[in-house]
Length: 182
Image (cartoon, rainbow, N blue to C red):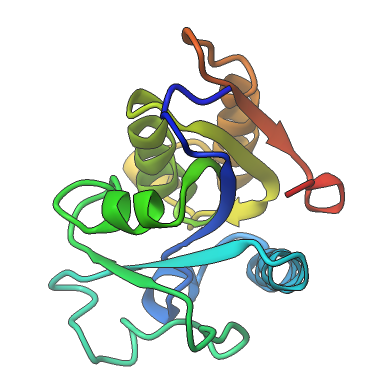
């Protein structure tokens, strides 16, 4: 249903599951285990896995905080998109990576829910992609000290509103890990 022409394929997009991003994340180990199961399932079904890795002053390239968590390993042929902004499409090669693979449907997991995950969801949807958020495979840290709701509420709210997104010729949805169909 995507509005992108000649893009029948699906890709799993894993966003910023880096040491410095998920070190203190809500439900960290369970979310990483679910992301791992999604990666394994995508690989088994021949679905592209695309990794997104944030670079910033807090996550300097090559540092331990910048590295992906040890529970997740990039496949030799899987692209790793480097980014500096919340939206994984902004000033990156993500669009060209997906176009080369004929991808018009994205399954999204990772961190942080209220930053890069949300930005990428919206960025993908407005660019014409069908976009599915894996409701139990994204997380964020506790930012209540800064006025944010508790992490479980941030996650629940994101899942709630993403399931109601609508636009001509595109589909948005949420699904639990166990129910993901590539």
